[in-house]
Length: 436
Ligand SMILES: Cc1cc2nc3c(=O)[nH]c(=O)nc-3n(C[C@H](O)[C@H](O)[C@H](O)COP(=O)(O)OP(=O)(O)OC[C@H]3O[C@@H](n4cnc5c(N)ncnc54)[C@H](O)[C@@H]3O)c2cc1C
Image (tube, rainbow, N blue to C red; front, top):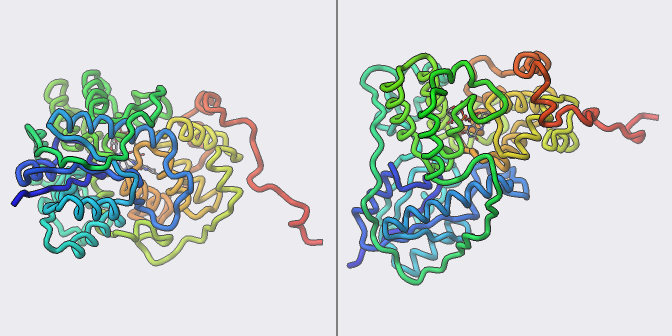
């Protein structure tokens, strides 16, 4: 009997170093490669109606075009559905007699629920799900996922012990099983604008960027420059391609190791790996805590005392607060879909500690805007800053004025991103609010 496979792409938009796709290549006779544009959301309950920002949407569409091109080179093509994955997959299983289902393991609780539902509903199918978003496989970790250390430092000490190795990435398959015929495709590649953006989506652009980064000597001074606020060179800018999986994190490490062999290893080259370990920590953290990633009280029991104030939230999103530096960051985020790590820390700290807002709304806004949105990194970092996550210190409140003096002493960033005008009071005052 013909073996019909369905490969569900999520945040693994590549053919390189993709273990589940390689498995599919060897196991089935025909294959459907599916991506669902009405993507499930990892943050139940707090969605903003605009869904993806134009920058994030464009980056995703470019990534899909590039994936389709890579699939065509292997004898396949991408089927894109504007549907909930569960509906799209169920329909394809029935109509095309799918016998094998493949996917990369996704850390999002919603995606996990979909996979579990499919397994329960279609017991006769053959299911394969493999990790491709992390440096390590679960069986390589020196602890069970439920036993993930409660701080990053403990985690790092454990994974840096001798004997735990980051495995070399796997090459792409030489070819893929042929596509099933006559499949409805909602794919209209001309629906995205090719306007110049800071980042171009897709594996080709990502690989080009990483190669160019390591062809210069930037990695050798990364530790000194990484807290910059503006420009392409102060940090690696690998995150957009890592987040949607256009580029494999193990491929990045391979290139880092090659750079070290060529140009020499130092504190800075190590620090790139150190930051990738943060990414890794948040991935396993999200696997461990599941939907608690989105809970107001985070991974603890105590909910913060913050609340939701619509006006403050609106002003923060628009970059219209009494804090020029924060306004500059928010304008930059809204314009480009990207924000430096320092910028993210400061706007999140302001959100929680100055504006007293419920951190989940800030995380949801980031989810909508960031072209490098990654469910684990975003929600894990927000929890950390809100004091409901993996921070042994409890919470992080930054002195915004001091931070401005350190990182933007000449006000250049604030001026460039029009952070200082017009400055608005935090809350508007209505005469009706005053007691008579
Ligand atoms: C509130 C908040 C929300 C964030 N949301 C996201 C997100 O949705 N997606 C995302 O990829 N990163 C997120 N980060 C982490 C970090 O800010 C970005 O990864 C980084 O700024 C991306 O730029 P870069 O690639 O030049 O980073 P570099 O400084 O060059 O770091 C190299 C790589 O290490 C990883 N990394 C670095 N710092 C962190 C960190 N703190 N946590 C996890 N991974 C890290 C990223 O993969 C990054 O590409 C968030 C941080 C904060 C404080």
